[in-house]
Image (tube, rainbow, N blue to C red):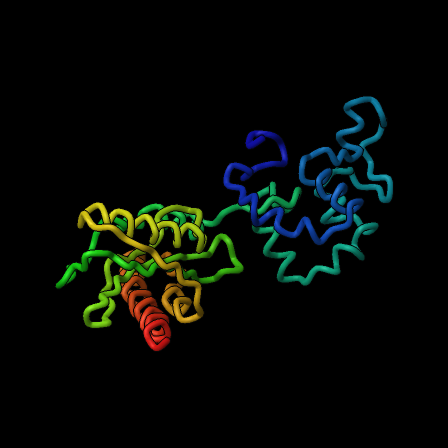
Length: 264
């Protein structure tokens, strides 16, 4: 498909971006959209080569017919075309063929840099903070948090684990970090935190319990992480900072939880 005529740039297509509005279309409109996107919208210039029409002329004007002519030039479709604001029309015309002829949007250089940054996030689930007094049983509080929850391609997730010490009613940070990989979801973050707690139990050779937290305070950790693909070293610094912030959030909620438990 990438070498097919009128589909230049398809090799860099962003499928999620190109199809995320599909649920907003009616069944009939969606069918027409799929025809336009898959290249089976045959205009007279294509139909004439198959013997269906002798002339390549547009059925509504005297110009030679083509997908480009129908969507960008023909006066018959001008009313529909003019519903789009000029700046958007100009933006689309600056994109590859697969975009302005068939509606496939491509990834930008910034998108690719951001993806590489996500893939380069280190796995710190087996790296543990020093604990002054390791309890006989590890009571681990775990959680994950995310930035830009409604934008799948912009999500950035952090996770953290802290340990409760019953003797002095304190909570110490155990592990934290960013979430490696392109699939940035809170569920993966929470599972990574739980896995880190399991690794800690094996490392310290202690029995353990985990307490999953889903609370609003932990969201402050990832709110500080923004999409700064131009400075990946700053992003790495933000991941570390957010991990520490998530420690504090986790510790705060753990204190509140155990305070209620001990007051009964």
